[in-house]
Length: 286
Ligand code: SAM
Image (cartoon, rainbow, N blue to C red):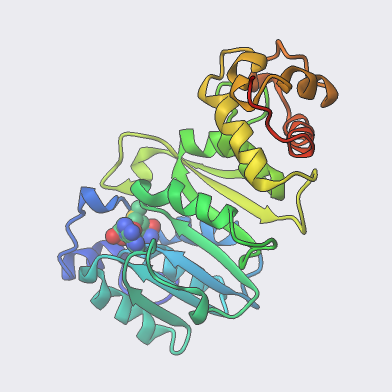
């Protein structure tokens, strides 16, 4: 069967290199090259961009990214068994694909990439959220990437794009939406993967904003939202009382009823509260 790039179909690649999926590495492979090209297209025009891909596996999404015209792809793969398959992709796209065999949580990728940079990945579920949080909380903003196009299990994707007063709304939504535009661009059923996972998946596309939507100190915002959502059903005057006796006044100054609950408060509201808290430092009870 002809493929988008003249390389063998992924099923054959997996068979030839004996890539039996390992659960502990989150290996659920995409074998349909039309689908991987579609995912690559969600990242926008790749022709002038370096793309960072985490977990290329046998190279399905990598081939989609290259077929869609990525200037260069840097792929970081932990499983050395995938390297021979990726070498075949390198040979088909000379000078366009670099592969690092390593753990994406440890490898320094920045020295290998030239801006503009987009991140596109069918992430291993076990490290996906951790990587996303790292990418969303760099030392300074804007981050090294222009956009993130990432596959997650559907429930995590819903937490990233969630709005107030919904079940999925929480810290991840606030973190993602504070400095990014975040939307779900594709839903995938379990059967899209080999082997099929138990859960549905979705691709989220995040575009960085030049700066935060509302001013706030990142550490204060993070502390407040952690406290508020750790006890999401409690009134804020109670879940935030560890910040000191002035918290009721600070909530009111931020335009938030002290009896409101975390899930009712918008991003704008949390940022206003973070500014109030930063203005008047914690007071310890006498
Ligand atoms: N991109 C391929 C695809 O779409 O078919 C494979 C996706 S599979 C869900 C996740 C991939 O991430 C696997 O190839 C796995 O070996 C790799 N992986 C798991 N943990 C990793 C880590 N910490 N760093 C880099 N790669 C990792």
